[in-house]
Image 1 (cartoon, each protein chain N blue to C red):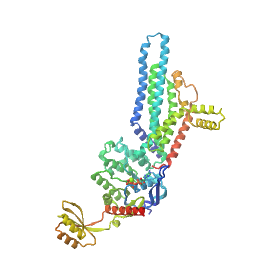
Image 2: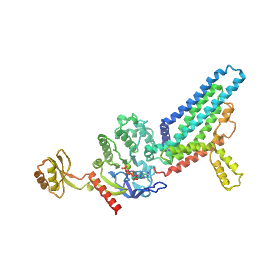
Image 3: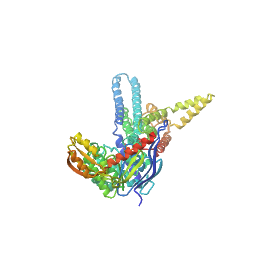
Image 4: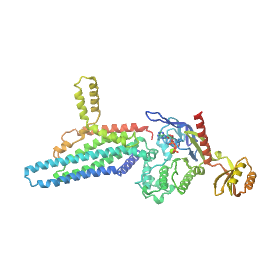
Length: 282
Length: 319
Ligand SMILES: Nc1ncnc2c1ncn2[C@@H]1O[C@H](COP(=O)(O)OP(=O)(O)OP(=O)(O)O)[C@@H](O)[C@H]1O
Ligand SMILES: [Mg+2]
């Protein structure tokens, strides 16, 4: 009971403090501008096309619709991941800096509880931001296409799990440092590598044909990394959003596996954070 | 009954960088005992290891060796012990987007308090630290003195037996200082034990029962104020202190301090009788304002102890 009360109050405090950050607000406003702007702008561009004969204008409209979706999904992912990294990288170092952590950890609050509260607070912020952006996109698409774009919601779910993985490891790095610079760089690195794991597989496949010993080890390393690192691409439904109807269900049925994998990676990240933080000198 | 806080052979070495090993020996084998119901003044120049000691007692950093006992218990990280210690860190920040009472509510929840119990406790604490008029205002608008009261308040929420304060009055104006000091003294009178690290020696002298002086991680002196401040002499407040008069007094073995416009304080050494001193004054043609006995101040003791320690250190370094 007490455990949850104090953990929850740390989470809530993290949330209240986090949403005051100007950087976060900036990213959110930018993403909203992009989503609004793209839907408006193309509506504008579409106007003269109405005059053209029917056949061509549907092709044109289709291209435009893809463009809008592309811009919006990309904006949500990019700004979402920036917010995620930024907030996950800063909550703990900031408290070390302003010494709030001293007053909190000298209360009957274990370090495990403290981290749990902080991490939950970060997830609250990430989730709410993602929801805001998604709902905006959802509404814009609904109005444009006059069907309920449920696919967007599936995409948001998977995107959240992608963010969760990035967040957990960024958070773990932040538990070892006193400023948010290193963990931010680390978070970007994780996100980028997580999107490139296919290349690692490529490398290992290509190298396996060579007989050179060095190549062999490189191949092993690449393969090991490929198996170990999360493939964040799998969590990305952009292609489906572009090519399927907005109210189609997602085409592959991998979602439960992805959610499970995401949770496992996130748990690993959190455990790592705890291991790093448990005996940390403050 | 066990000591409230007791350290044995407490040692802390901060490990230096990975490449150039430059370890800092912040505390060297410190034995400290703080008794129940006292205000313990923990003194020492910058970097002598005061904050290091306090952080170890609170489990924020870990000893390299040695033991710490709080009320006889070694499990200082347990919730039980934490509940008994209130801590006001040095120069801490309190979330300034919250109201005074919201800050206390947040910290109260960390003790697992909630509902009516918590509200009652908050009212009580606000009353103790005197924040009643400002409890609904944002901390952003608080003065330094009010922030320090919030700090004191959050440390008192669990009604702890021990209060540890790291430089509680640094940066406060004289009035705010006096008010904080009065609060601390009344907490002591209410039965709490206080450990205060400070550079404000006058203040410490006014409210402490015992003091310890640390230098470079080693305890140089520890005792009650009465035990430590035993040196007594006499001062004469005199005017007409011309350069010639000053010269004459010096020959007589009396030194003058703080001379401004011919007025100043003459320090009569213990070896000289008061009659001799008065004679010397008359011969030099001085007008006497007052004659007063005085005892060594904590500041003088501090300067003496730390000065000696420094000289010893230099001597051993050159030897
Ligand atoms: N995290 C750290 N890493 C390395 N050295 C440290 C660390 N913290 C403190 N020190 C060093 O340990 C010594 C003791 O520092 P400490 O902060 O305990 O002093 P202090 O008595 O509180 O000083 P002040 O009066 O300035 O607050 C200093 O030499 C300081 O530089
Ligand atoms: Mg200090």
